Every structure is written in structure tokens, then in C-alpha cells.
Image (tube, rainbow, N blue to C red; front, side, top):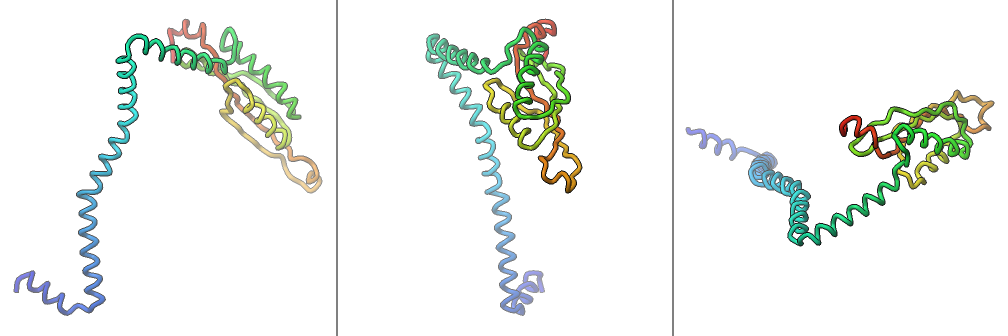
Length: 209
């Protein structure tokens, strides 16, 4: 008896439940093969096309501007220059990155005082040149309550200058029943970062990134 004949013979002796499981298994294998052969390639193609859309849109936009002639190019450059001017209003204004770090320290001190935090340390970190700009950072070590710390962080967020908190480390003191009625004492280290014109640093380093 051939292999096919033996298979058919065994199938005839299967119960209805076993037959149903066999059919479901065969259908599952067929569905899996169909998905691998037809669906997965379509999904990969869709993802590839979707990834190219931003690049293609940018290319079309550039050619569209160029096709509009010199007047269109000048108009676009003027718009971008205006946007850059608005953004640069958020830079820390100083003669050098080191001076910008000192200016940032001067900004942070009154915010600490208004937040009723105790300043334990305030120091400028080394500037990092990034193209035409430099990133300046100040490390602030303070002690105080949760409410005071929230107020200090809110002061940073409200500023028109482009400032962000790069690092935030918080530790709390030992808790006891005697301190239950007092505000929780936090020891906090914060790194506040701003941007400024790299100025002389770029010329000295040959435009280092």
C-alpha cells in the first residue's frame, strides 16, 4: 500500500473531534504559508515606502522652491532667517560661553531664593561647542521641601530663554515620628542647561562640533 493509501486509511478511522483538529491544523499551515509568501512582503514594502516619504517630500519641496525662481528662493530664505532670529532670542546673551555660564548662575540664584530652598553649591560646568552654538550648564545643589523644589523647576520652565533640566538627582533625609509634622527635607542636585553663541570658541577650534 502506498503512503497516500495508508494516510487515507488512517484518516477514515479518526473520530469527528480528531478530524476537526486535523483540518484546523492543515488550514493553519496553509494560512501561515500564505502570510509568509504574500502578506509579509507587502508589509515590508509599505514600511520602506513610508520611510521614504519624508525624504521625497523634502526633495520635492526643494525643487518646487527652485522652480519658482530667484524671488521664491529669496522669500524662503527670508522666512527661515526670521525663524532663526526668533529662536536665537532664547539664547543666553553673553560675549563668550564662559560668560553665559556665569550669567546663568546669576539667573538661578534668585529662583532658588524665591523657592525657599537652601543653596549649598552653584558651579558652572565646561561649555560644549555644537556648531555655531555652545551648550552651557550649571550644577545647582540645594536643600528644601518638595513644594520648594517644584517651585524652582517651574521657574525654569517659565523662562523665555531656552533652558532645560539635563540631570535631576533627589535624596530624602531619614524619616522619624518627630519629623512627621515638618516638610520633607530633600537634597537635590540639578543640572540646568542653556544655549549661547559659540563665538570665539568656534574660531579658535576651527568650527569644532
